Amino acid sequence: MNNLQQPRLLALGDGAWTIEFGSSIDPVIHSRVLGFCNALQKSTDIAEKILEYLPSFRSVSVYYDPAKVDGILLGSELLNLAQNSGNQVSEGRQLYIPVCFEDEFGPDLNEVAQLKNLEVGEVINLMTSSIFSVYMIGFLPGFPYLSGLPDSLNIPRLANPRLTVPAGSIAIAAGMCAVYPWESPGGWRLLGQTPVPLFDVNHSDHPALIASGDQIHWCSINKARYAELKIECQKTNWDRDSILEIKDWS
Image (cartoon, rainbow, N blue to C red; front, top):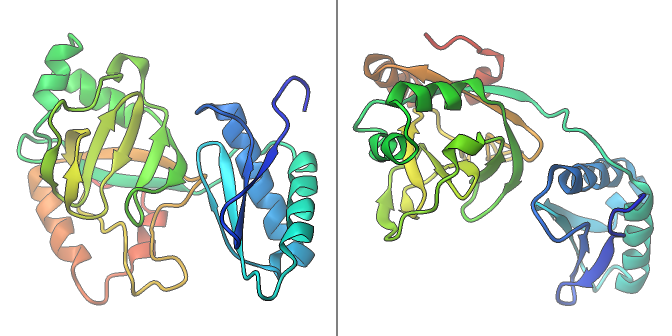
């Protein structure tokens, strides 16, 4: 692992272990997280002992049934796997997701532009020309934390969080980007909104559209196109996964 921190095994109650690869949000540390997840998926012996695993920015928590599995032995196996799993540059899916940046969908867009001495069009261009990597899912079901925000858009959270943020809102704060899959409170700066549902319980195998390791491209659309797609996405026969094949939303 060269000069990188050796992975640490941390107990998480009596039914889970957390394997920690570092102490900061860093692309190299996250590549180790992805490498471990990839190795975990390929390890048949370990996979059959666990219930699920949850990656974060810098660690992976692995859950198991302590009534059926020797937790001490499993922890040793997980640590050994982590020490040898190496790094993985993300090869996740490329998702092109439509976003409307017009005023009613991006209430903080003008203020962000003013605070960063940019034109509104420049902010939109920075968002749509950047590739965002999904570091983890958390806070809410299907809520992705994305790296890749340009330094010129690094801005603090709102001093007073909103009580209600609309579902589908694209937001930035503290050097990161995110999108709210549900209506909820939130303190990130809202720049736009996507009509695409990001969480669907009807997809029992993967209800969250976005997964850790995916690459996100925001595609600007106008208000009329947003309305069309909103109606289309609400149809009962709409295939949510079809957006994996779409790159041009104009």
